Length: 610
Image 1 (spheres, rainbow, N blue to C red):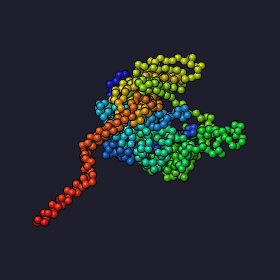
Image 2: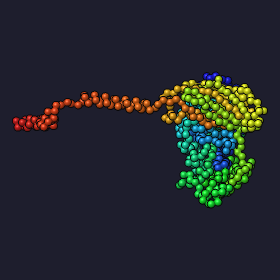
Image 3: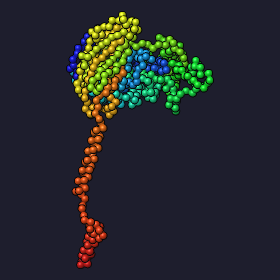
């Protein structure tokens, strides 16, 4: 599993696991025993879209299964974690693509986001690496049945052990030297309502009340981008020495406002009537009234939560104590100049801070938010991401190819980050062809004064573990440093292996999915958490045989067998008789009747003699 070439990246860039666990326990604001469960919703309008972030947090004491209280923490997940000796778990279900140019920086700095499909990593306790890997397989197989997903396909060919790409977020004091980090991906997995249903069943109110009452599979999976995350980490309960488990469930999605507000009885998109279209009045032919040159709709139209999600918020989850210091709350961050109105039948509390309005939901009343239309938003500009990444496949043919990653740093300060790639075993990268090219991302006039750094200045450290055919995936991990306002191009060549016909998927001509690259942006300050960016997944084509030939062979063989067996069976079974035997009086029927008559005559003669 770990017998690969390369330096131990973690020895030079990461402290011990115990130090990280202790550090992040103070940064995360660990949940106390007074607030075992809380839920929160954050709404942020985007151009023609709405970013909705759902967050649910629950805590349970880390004791034996017989002594735990499973009122807020799901018992099914706790049993799996105890059986697999898992101390920390992170699971992601993601579909769609995040548009950085229109939407800006990723929500939660990418910490609750995964690559396309399913991504999972966990810290498993084990005396040896082989024991921990056995428990890792038990963990993925158990979660596969719990979440109705294909996690059982995460085997040794899809599992790696990153060195510095991930950091623990929980709190622990003993036994950290026995923890082993495993990371697995399924970029081909399609996220659907079968994964959402067990996700909802883990919530205390199960979508019947509170923030979770807005969640609907039709809306979530109709979004342009969505990510479901489950994070379980060890925490310290209050100021005591008691420890517990904290689980955070989050759903982030970007909904297209116009598409989401279509009526249920007419979901097909149709053009607006002419009297409702916005026309460009500068066009001369608009004066006749029978023509219209449409212009783009307002970037921030008016809408309500009921129109977008199809329902209102149904009060507060009754399991949440009203005296809870983290109750059900909704925070709204409108665009510049946009007004927000609240529609509620019950009493609610409002607080304002840092450009957003937060509302404490009423207990037994519906709650709705209305965003007013904003035609122009000249002062609106999405926050710049720290890094932008694009990854493509180059080359031609079915034997060799190349991989190219373009990373852009738009900030005015250097950025240190870790670049992780997990390649399938049939992609064999040539590390000696690894090249880095740094150029300025500013205007052409400033390029002349730019000095491109050398490769040694860009790549601080590297870890590479080659893949083994049908046993292990290739693992490439780089620690890079980018100057401000620069663009880094990372390229290398690879070779494609020849697969067996049983290793091809049912749609072999579609190609094979390659997991997205994971970029961890290292913090520039000691108290700042890390940010994450993931590229899109890739589609690689491999030489595939003509799968119609086996069917042709089967059909031809079946035909030959049918003809041969039928002829032989006909010769063995069929009785040949002369033509005179089939004439009148000489047929088989007549002979049978004669025999029957002879037998009856004999039986009648015996009766007379008696």
